[in-house]
Length: 114
Length: 113
Image (cartoon, rainbow over all chains, first blue to last red; front, side, top):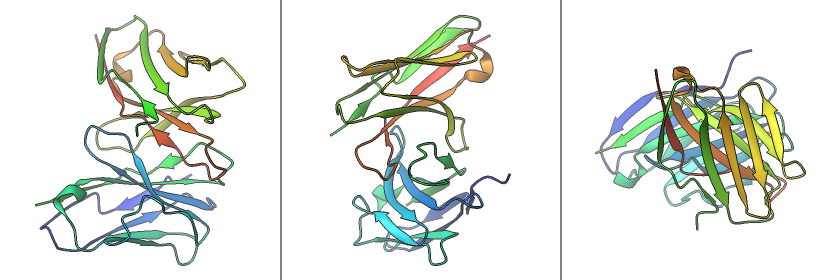
């Protein structure tokens, strides 16, 4: 069974530029999560999708971050414009449904904002 | 407001000995706890979990203990192996029915040969 795929693995941008990350969850997993992990901290949930609907985006900085999962499969997370404090690893995770607490994580995208 | 805390940033143990990683939480509404392991440049991988109706769960070399009255859980690894060297995250869920996980800051475990 293929795991959660993410791309790119690394990205370096200047502040005020925009960037997009892509995630393809495990086949059949209805629930998709985007996390932000700042160095030295644990992952923090940014947004959760159930199929193509948003379940929780309470911690997403909506003035600069956006995410979509149009067909209920893969998802993109965008930052526009980026700030220095957005430097982090962005992790995508998926699960069969929210009742199953175990989430499967992708390798993450390391973003550096200069 | 850090609802899940791992107060030890790092731990070093000798191969073959026991590793004990600790985690504290503040919200009594959490009803499910998980431990994840993370190697550099990889995503976290699920290790073991425990429901709040239990006080112990064992899987091979890994055992998780839950003390609800103290709002404390611990992960025991016996015997520790060099391949166990990684960052370990404690996570809690149950505040909503969305499966949302709240993570601790992580503890870096180094197992010396």
